[in-house]
Length: 401
Image 1: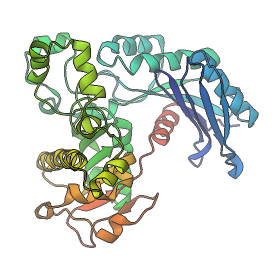
Image 2: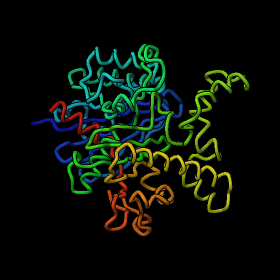
Image 3: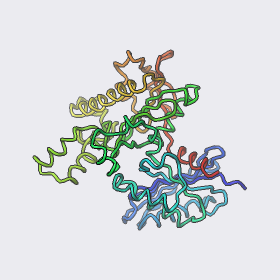
């Protein structure tokens, strides 16, 4: 029997998201989430999908650590006849947030690879440690099975040095690995290729601006299937206005807060990453709630929305200039896929660039990839649901099959 299944694991500091896929037809056999790991109120939600089933199961109670979490996941899968000991399981694919410059493609995890991911912890202190924990736990459960790391940063390693370098002292930058790495790369890779398919073209023929708009948000300029610019930098803080992150800000603000407000480095870090963006501007980071408040005349919500859209427009224009020719602009992720007012506002006034949306198409709800630009538009505007888990599974399977 040929092994065709891939288990995808996305390990956070206190959570594990997972999906089991069959790569013969890219179908999902099971999906689930373990959250609040290490707390008394831990919760596991598991949905088996094989055979057309969708009976959601939930269990609550303390789950001490990631080892216990993955063992619980294995039990749920075994209950559905999809156990980790199945000979049909080809590999486990892990989302790893930061791969630095060394990893530009999916990589089979060895001790050396894991050591390099550990060396990158200082530039991804919130993400890489959790990813490492998930990897080690999965290795202990199935030491005989290929484990593959798919890096958020990998898609962006094609950026030219002119885009990746910060204008600071080169020796200092190199000594401390300071450069623009970019994130959400798995999503940008998937969406740029899916947009090309939507246009009936090969990715090598298409220039696309991708806007990944969720609680975290990023933009990328993709020329012929290769990323040439992206909005996030050394960390996921740079770039667009996000749910709780400031995005672009004058670096001297940090010095000012330290000198004048007496804030510590950790306090400033928390301010910019957790208390800024939409939540800092209006107290909400849910775009649905912000739009409701806007419609009721709430001025703080209106200002937050306007700042959010203004930053989007700046990046669209900048990436249009970087690419020179744009064939499509694609919206994706939670806000990008579902918030029609955001898409409309971001494109409004850019008709001179060949960008426009059809009001009816933009307002229509659908879970499918679709065009929302008027017929005959010079630049296609698309809504393309992202599928990072499928992309991780695809890259994992291609590497090991």
